[in-house]
Image (cartoon, rainbow, N blue to C red; front, side, top):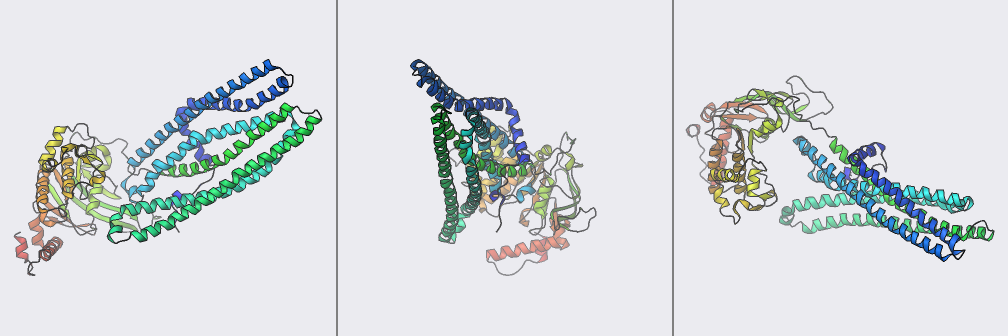
Length: 622
């Protein structure tokens, strides 16, 4: 059974991780210092109450001094209010510090995620990354806001109580603390049981989250194949595992806290028994006996709280391990130290002996320097071609030939292993990444829209794109006709991934987005196969207007749509097999000829026409 990293618990305390976590406290060290002073104050106030009680009994009640008793009562009341005020300030500052650190950490994680290459997202589930930014950061907030600081406060109270009771009566202090070994044994057993139950609960929660995410994403398939009953039974089984894990945790806690109370009561009984004997022998005052009973109750309460803090600390160590593992993931796409800044971009693109692989067959092997296959799983092999500025070139080939890979490489979503990709004669790795990508407009077959409005999806936050520019771009790509049918026009709400829009509408929005940003180079992944004839006509007209005056790289799926491009590059198994115009490639009767013939055969079958196949001469005059 595979265990995901969300299910794994680390050590309860890791000095290396804790030092790194404390670095996030440094910007707020003044607040931390104030909190520590407040903790010291509240700890002193907690132990001052029993001391005032002892003084009131031995000095004023025993001597029947009503005036002194009134004064000690007022002083006690003042201590209570001071404790309330200091506790309020301490809690407020701790929570505020925790929230500030949480904001800083989330911003750091999100900023790092933006810098990571697409290869990282190819192998990292989105749900797991969301957990890093949300749940794991929340756990650390709990550590900063209530865990570390309150542990320190509890320890101050414990040592303060020990010092006071040993100062007042050494023998009675030993009697009172004689039950501590029993408490230590109970705490150790509880720690082991709580750790195991907590691990089970976390594992069950991870599986519930994974199952629900998968089921919600694939709900259309579940309903289509009448899979609801089976899915329900599967979820019931996973949910019952979670229930049993929680019941184990409940059992551990339901035993631990009563046992602590039992040990506390035993300690008080021993104090009353031994202290009562000392009172009879005049070795102890009644006020001191009350002091010991009072402090004994306060002594065992922090110990019970420390067990809860142990779980917070353990969970925080596991979350910090996962967060720092993400933050330590290197952004392999590095900016050049001194990037070349192009005053203007003409748009010339050249691939010069490019070799690229997404991964190795054997990850332990060394990089190759020659052009052999070696242990790399090559996607592109020695690819070379040149696209002059302003020219339109189409890339065709079977599925898996490497067409989409070319898109990813030319904009440095991935870096090549060997060769060069040039923009206006400059290696793209020497250019500023932001300037490089700004020079390209990309329209993919699967259009991604963000939650917002139609206008915001065209502008994408670019400040210099005005409302007029949005309307002009929409009109130029035939989107304005669709927008006119919406009640709110360009302010029409777009829901997640554009779920309320048709495929054609989303495609036209993508064209308007590209046109509004006015790139010098344009990359198109044609997407007219999933729309009706009328929308397809609008999309093709939009493509023609979008291509005007730009260097265009078109990934072609339907060969009938690319016959007017300047050149066609035919890829096959990662290699450039043919380059030429539509007519020249047909006349060559090579791989392009076969692809073109195959698509016409498929069209004839779909149209249910007679089985007569087009002759090569018919294809040549197309």
